[in-house]
Image (cartoon, rainbow over all chains, first blue to last red; front, side, top):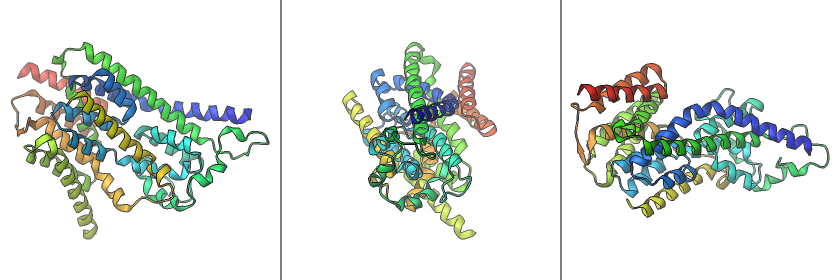
Length: 281
Length: 107
C-alpha cells in the first residue's frame, strides 16, 4: 500500500515536472486572453470562470476576438465548437490507455485533456509501454488514427476491476501496476493551475494598462504565429487561403456568420486538395 | 451581448468541449473514430485562424476595408515574416507588437 502511494505520488510529480516547460508557452496565451477579454468588455469574473469552464486556449481567444468584433451567439458557438473538435482526436488517442480506469478517473482526466497535457501524457504512455497497435514513433499530433482501431476491445466500465488505484494494496502489489494516470493527472493539473493563474495575471495586468498599448492586437498576432506553424502541407495551405479570402467575401453577413461560412469553405477546399493530390499520385 | 447570454455561451462551449474530451474515453470507449472526422479535424485550425486573422485585419463592422494607411496591416506583415523565419510564437507576438508601436510613430 505504502509503496503504491509513493509511486503514485512519484508519477504525479513526474507529470508536473514534465508539463512545467510547456507553461512557458501557455502562460503568455493565458495573459493575452485575460487582457483581451477585458478590452472586449467581458467582466473579469466571467473571463476567469471561462478559463475553468472552457479551458481551451485557442477557443477562448477566438471567443474574445469574435466578441470584440461584434459577433453573435450562434457564429461564436459554431466557430469555437468546431475549433475544439480536435479534442475528440486526443480522446480517441488516449482511449486505449485510460479505458481500464474507473469512471471517476476518466471523468476527471477528460476535463484535463488539453493540447498541452495530451502532448506530454501521450508521450509518457508511448515511451514506457509502446502499444502494439501504434507504430513506433507516432507523435502526438496525429496519434489518434492508429489507436482508434484498438478501441474496439472491451467497453470501459467492465474492465474497471483491473483499475490500478491504490485501495487494492493488501497483498503484494503487482510489479507492472499501471500508475501512469497519476502522471497524466500531474501534467493536466499543472497546466490547469498555470492557465488559471495566467488568466488572473492577465486580468490584473489588463486592468492597469492603458488602451493605447493596443494589447488586443496580440490576439490576431497569436493567430498569425499559430497559423504559420500549421501551414506545413498543401491542403492546409489551401484551407487557410480559402478561409481567409472567404472571411472577406462574406464580411457583410450579419452576426459575423461570414466567419463560419469562410471556415466551412476552407475545410471544403482542404478536403478537395487532399483528394486532388491523392488522385495525382 | 448581455452578461447572461455570455454566461450561456461559455457554458455551452465549455460543455461541448468537455463532451469532446470525454467522448472516446468515456461515452464511446468501445467505438473507433470515423475516418472523415480525422480528415476534417486536420484543417479546422488553419482555416479558423486564417479567417479570424483576415477578418481582424481587413473587416471593420461588416465592410471590407484594406486599411494600408494604418499601422496594423503592416505590423501583421512583420509578424508573418518573423513567424515564417523563426517559427517561434512568442517572438512573433513580441515583434508584431513592437512593429505596431513603431509604425504608430511613423504613420
